[in-house]
Image (cartoon, rainbow, N blue to C red; front, side, top):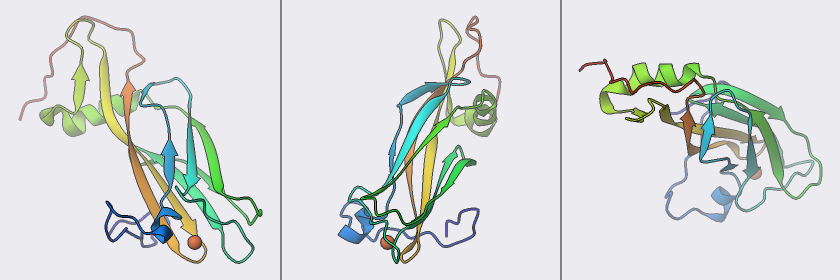
Length: 163
Ligand SMILES: [Fe+2]
């Protein structure tokens, strides 16, 4: 069972291909660039959900968290506002170290893309949004993102990690 830092159980849609109305109101929608460069800020907007969730006194989204490559990047506490939807924008940046971490984790299965010409590296990882509704509990979603290295380009180096 997936848990967040709060150790609360995360709800899963019964059929991800056919979300119910209740699931659509709770599964976070992540808007972000498809490709970013390490060290350069970018914005990630999280909305709950694809059908807006109410933000009323008795029923509202308590918080929204954003993770990048399993690391907590931001958490926003929310309160009943009467707004039509729960929406948060985080301005974040990917750490250059993420490239090296992913390289070590997954190089054997080509988790790192290296340009044969300039040596520029990129990794594919995930943004992970988690939210908690005070009535319906914790829900999550993922969105793939490509992080390009922000380091100076150099002659292409071959991966030295061997299986
Ligand atoms: Fe709810």
